[in-house]
Image (cartoon, rainbow, N blue to C red; front, side, top):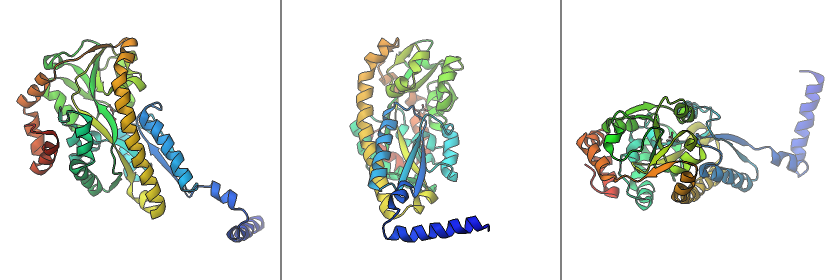
Length: 339
Ligand code: X2X
């Protein structure tokens, strides 16, 4: 060890001692003990990221700077598939992911996305904050990920297209539609006789622009904030499923954090989720007019024939078999008989 390095170490040991009696406290408070990354796939302007920023500031303040949550929106750290492997390895500490995509690792997690299961938000939150959500979180925990209690809203999904409006299930026949990377999504659009292509959200805008696919399906809040209206002409209010984001943490990273700090972090994440749910519902309710002004042609199909088509294609029976009777009962307890 060189002389100067030894001197430096002595000097910093001395200042640590001095710090104990109050001297360089300011400098120490500015360095966070934990600097954790939170990655997601949504644009900066989506309520999820707006609330996440607020939440990160609250966490920093309440932990007196000990916990610094850095947000990486908009697939900056990769696609959902990449981020899912990073959350497992610890490359990122936090990640929000649709339960349906998480199902590539935790099959039970897609049950909340069953076609036409939820009639409205009241039913969604009762189920997801109740028995069905608890069941799913139990399965996520078994896969060795940490999951926060409150799921964040993505919303009820609508279908957009550059070629034609979707008026009934027959319009899905042969329709080239992008779906997220998830067996349930592919299965559902195959049951409609569509031609689904699994594409990560990071590639959706360009896949629509270059016409690799004709259409896609997402809540209006995403169609708006990700500017998908620029590359689509029609929006059919199919409301075919509800989708939400589980707030996941890497287990090793989470367990390194002392209990008192963890409590503050979890409390703020869950509180932000509840606020984000309100934001998204409001945004989705008001967006039709705004998007129509930007050139999207809207239509409101009757959903009964879509549901009947899924039933006659054996979709509900097939997935009931996959999830098992117990989980299916939990779902039907919330939403009524499906199959
Ligand atoms: O990939 C999508 O379409 C998105 C953004 O809705 C999800 O994360 C499931």
